[in-house]
Image (cartoon, rainbow, N blue to C red; front, side, top):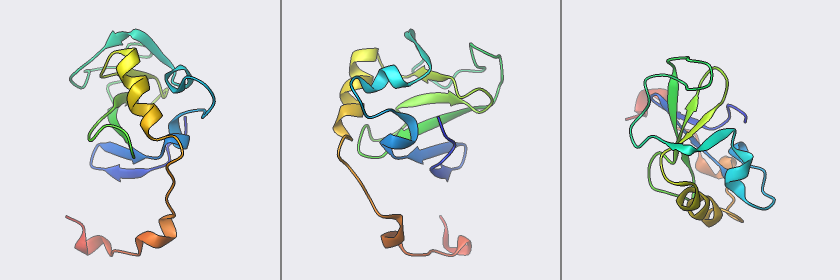
Length: 111
């Protein structure tokens, strides 16, 4: 996974192609234990024990954090069951945007 996307405090807003291989089942592209579900942000990564975890929101899917991601090893921790995460990810297939159309907002005007 790449660290692209828009930083939202401790979270990131990304496009589908930033986190998934667009072929087949999208949730299979995530480095994750599909049986480990964490509704709330975990205290540490179950793979490397790093305590820096970010929420990841994927544009065009669920309104809010779709999964958690370790900032050290990129390990994904699902917020929803595998089938539900897959349904949300499938919603974003074919979605695209042109960042050049977003315009420039000076940092002093951020909320």
